[in-house]
Image 1: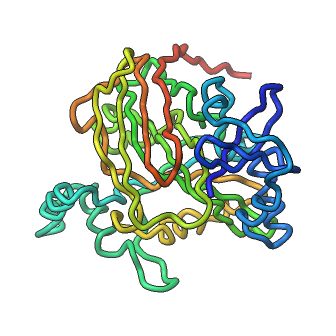
Image 2: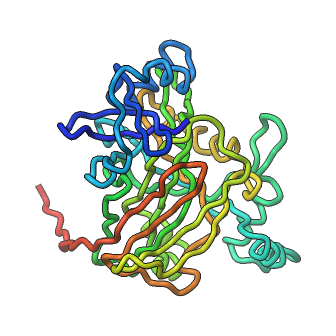
Length: 331
């Protein structure tokens, strides 16, 4: 099942089931958050509750919703400060060629490896533990709160002090913390984690700076488990709408050095991230970047990330935002 959030032509919020171009709005729920809260309260699955609420209102056209700019991110919170956006890196094995090259890099004496390659090797060796035991912890980063999330069609704004604004085609897990402090996973969505790779390459200690940016999410929430193999395509569309760069990407546990359960454990093991009522968007990483092919995306060009399991593609144009020097005043 695929769910989307959107606004009606009159500006009212809706959550609906997406099937091809048809969107069936759910009666009684204005948001994915409300639907998830009701599912927890009633002890029902998200898909079961959604199916029961569908069919009482006229269907809408997804194409019309997208064209008119009425799409919303598939999960949000009315108070953006209660939506945590985070991620993990060095988690994906990539294509067969990339995988073979990576294994050659991490072979031999561990002391000769860079810190990043040491961490990648740790994941390969211990990122998929058996049973309910924790595996090795991954690279982890904080990206922002709900105010940075952009729906499909909305621009990703690169601050003018950035050295780069590049896509990261990823799968994100979407979660709600129940009243009992237990995380519930609603499902998964396509994401563009969007980072400043030039800044990050200067020194890996600049990783935190490179991640404090917008991100794209959606359009749809895939309810249920993530397929073991997800195949997609990442593209850069020029200002003329033509494809300037494209490359296939893969995700899913079959293509990862960590299990989803292990990445989730190492995020939610912290009490800070189990605050009842909070929403979490957690990016799982990628092995495919246009930056790796020496592509520098320009303002006005568009990122497009697609994978058949997730319905329509995620599209976000790149924009540049001016910033001012901040001088702090003493009170």
